[in-house]
Length: 185
Image 1 (tube, helix red, strand yellow):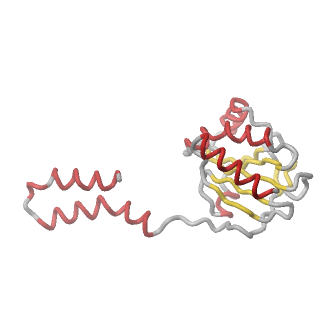
Image 2: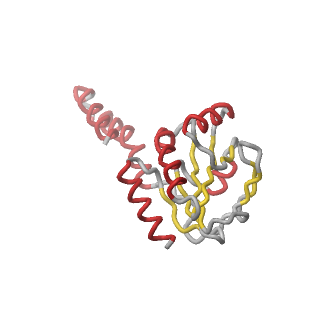
Image 3: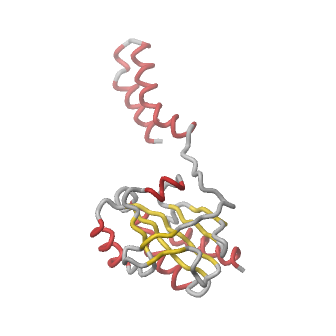
């Protein structure tokens, strides 16, 4: 909608040019980003049914191995502190999710941030106590070809059962909780 509004403003501003070529060029320039994202959406290469392997160190320098867990399910939160405002907002939901499913679901996070101290401060501020991997160079994010934020639900064999984008609101969070309950029972 923003691109259409910009295009209309461009048409209005240059309507006095009396040149169809200039007007057409302005419309094309303003609509190009909109059309590009509609025609070529970024598609995650990680998909339901894929197996995930992850062995790394957490921010707290502890080993993180998805295969070494007692909980039958795990959720991986992939987020960025640098360019993802919804990641910052939904972190409170992650803590609620951890409290609700403590014995059935292990939570992990993979975080991109240009600044390690910023990431640690974010974790402390939001009360995040589950393992967080600092993906400084976005190696994991790039290898999975996912966009942030994304939640990845996996089973005991590390098979992807669900990929979900940002929660966005309390209502959507409650729907996600209901979905997880149905999926793991």
